[in-house]
Image (cartoon, rainbow, N blue to C red; front, side, top):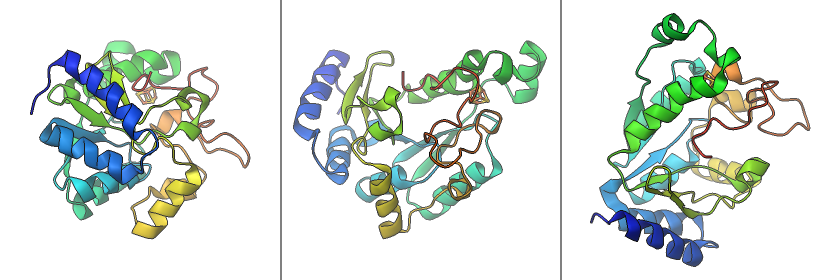
Length: 231
Ligand code: SF4
């Protein structure tokens, strides 16, 4: 069923009131029953917990991966393993320009000089293009990841994109995530065991020291904390 946009915003608000304390599988079930094929999952391949959860209730679900051209080899390997072992339809979204073409147009290492522009070109535009055919998207956002994510609702209205945004594990802690991964044998990016609790593009991600915030390694020293996908 396709919903008019004004009904989607209302639907999101009502669902969030009802599901704000529900277990993640119940939220996922509601999403699958409500949107069916008009729903996709986005995943950065730091781990595949959100994909695993979705695949249980909606086998064949579309999983969108933003292939920026700057990922670690381990992230690409995790993406390929997810596509191989889980019953999902992996959609690899690429920017309009290759890294070489972007370098020719804007100069090399745009990520150092203007990371907001780089993220706009390599993440935000491809995501907006990729989401065009859906009414709702699922994310693996958790409130405990950073102060900028502390108010993440389980079901929200993404007014900028005109989509329902569903975050079934918003209320999970990192320990909850680790438990789910261990209990279900979920694929994990090997970098998570090598000092990278949060994983983005290689030029903009560094290891974090013991006691540092999980996202301290993202855009370190650049005064940037989010790529713009979730703000
Ligand atoms: Fe560019 Fe860094 Fe953003 Fe990746 S995270 S798109 S390399 S600025």
